[in-house]
Length: 251
Image (cartoon, rainbow, N blue to C red; front, side, top):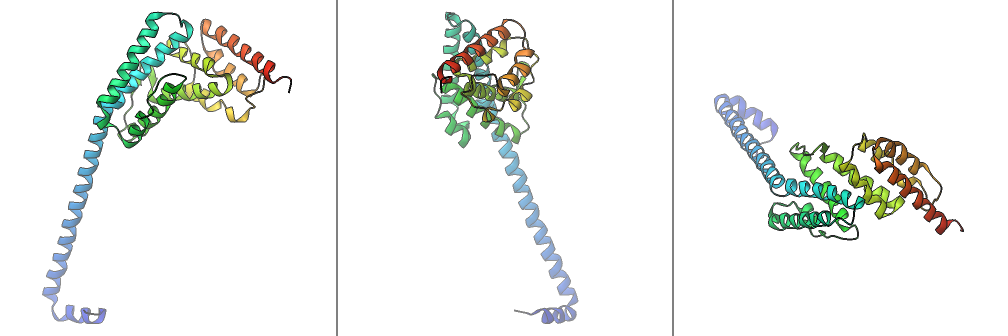
């Protein structure tokens, strides 16, 4: 093994051989580097291909059916007695389960975990929908996929589900579910702004007086919705506050 001084002396005595050795080393390193880069590009390309296939086979079909389910659910909160709406919800739910069962091999680890929570009733489906769309958002970003559902983007559907969660905390699930009616009515809502400004954590959920949450919901949601939906919502919120007053007013 040579030290630095001996290596310098050897190069001085064998200039031609040392040049060839250095050239060969550089060529070898360059060859290895190109192979590594080629492998990385191939791996990245194959990874994107797998993600695109997963989106085609399971994420996109599931998300479209979930969107249709939410639309029908919005109708059901308005006219729960209609048999055709109940039948439509049952059929869409069967389709959701079928897609999930037939395409489990395309699911990421995160989605596979979420699919195990696939259930319906007492708000369980909405818990699943939120978890699913969170996972879909992560996957879509990796390949710059931008899905649309009529006039809504993937992100906006996520906002609707998050708003539902916040309304559930303040008004209860039965009232919160009515928010899905926005998918079937005219409105000028900024879903992102509404979602960001509804601060559940900043209020006392037992407060029976109108507070900042109620005022924000009225200003950003009710004032930007047309038709009977606004009046129905106003009445429901008023009834909820009366219920809270009756329950907690004597404390």
